[in-house]
Image (cartoon, rainbow, N blue to C red; front, top):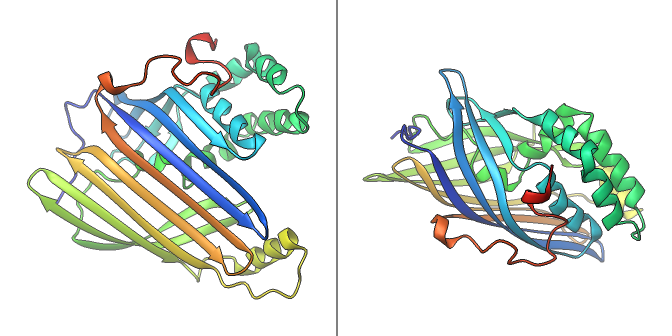
Length: 292
């Protein structure tokens, strides 16, 4: 079976819901974020494609300041022009310098004013500026286990009924990478293709020593048995080679003291199903029309 990029593809609208829960000992951080986005092809040649991903609206419910900050950062980097290879693999960002210009031409001042009474604002501003000065590190946020994974993967190729291949999520645990072995099962019914992925940690490539050290630093405990357990399931549905829905779930668990669970649900919608502008009052710093 083969997924071939639709030659008549112009744009599609999606609703994406992301959630995350991180438990370290008795401390719990969690958020749920709804987004409405447009993905459209703006350029292509025999070596690459450029897609424009535009955030149209969003709603964030988080338990920490960093979650609201992250939502405001998504406005900063929208629209983002994502470069993929012909198979759909993410390889870069075409308009990175535009984010720096936008940050310096008013966004930084507006967001500093919004969070001026929050402890830690200077650290957030400083870290964001460091990120904008480090394109390589900035790109990692698009290559991790984020909602961008729903759209930008090497889907457009010949698919075997069963496949195994490695995937590396750099910096998944801060300074520690997460290498996985994907076990994929692919089915075709007429014009519809379903991709189902499960995964396990690639123990040969996983830096267990650094991970154990990180766990000890997080918990201030040094007599730890660190047994990292993995649960992953992903289901992608395509019709006529266009993504219709995606359900992604990944949980990493160390019994008794550490769990991180991430989920993304994506479904294609019609333009008429987008929320009215401003329907989520107070959910973001500013909307796209005010960003210069």
